[in-house]
Structures are given as structure tokens and as C-alpha cells.
Image 1 (cartoon, one colour):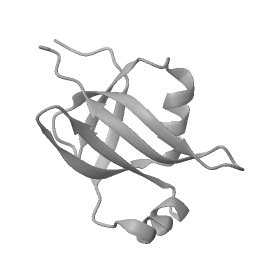
Image 2 (image 1 turned 90 degrees about the vertical axis):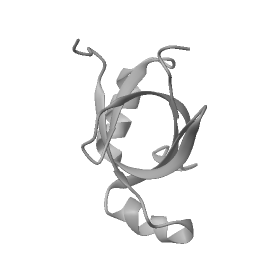
Image 3 (image 1 turned 135 degrees about the horizontal axis):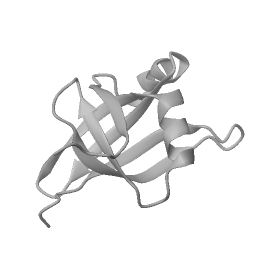
Length: 101
């Protein structure tokens, strides 16, 4: 069965703390993937793709997230921190949804 949800690509993130400023300058958005029974995983997303997707989706829309090219999992965009002046996202929280719950 093929999903009709939009897909977002992510990559594992090693940089933490103030070092993520370099990721933002490179056009990447730091994010965290978490959920019930799922270990929190720091990832990076393409900032432009994420912002475009977030603007076109509703508040409760599911997105398929593929981390490092692995099988996509459904996630909700749980929270987005935005810059006070530019209103661009600076961090995102992605909640993994278990479709059986």
C-alpha cells in the first residue's frame, strides 16, 4: 500500500548545543524525533523543504519521515520554534505516530 502523505527526508545529527548554528547557516534545520516507546533521535532537515511543507499542511497533518534513506515513519509536526525577527523555523519537534494506537 502506497502512502499519499508528503515525505520529508532527514539525516542523523551529531552536532549539539551551540554548534547547530553552523547547520542553520548551511540551510539545515535541527530537529528531534520522539514518541511513545521510541528513543529520541536528533536529526537535521532541509530548512527550505520543511518550511514549505509546514506552510502547506494543516496543523494536524501526518508526514512520512525517512531518516538516512530508511523506511519512512509517520510523524506529526509537534512543535516548531521560530526566530523572533525573521519568523523562520530554528528547531522542530517531530512526534512519531504509531498507526495501531
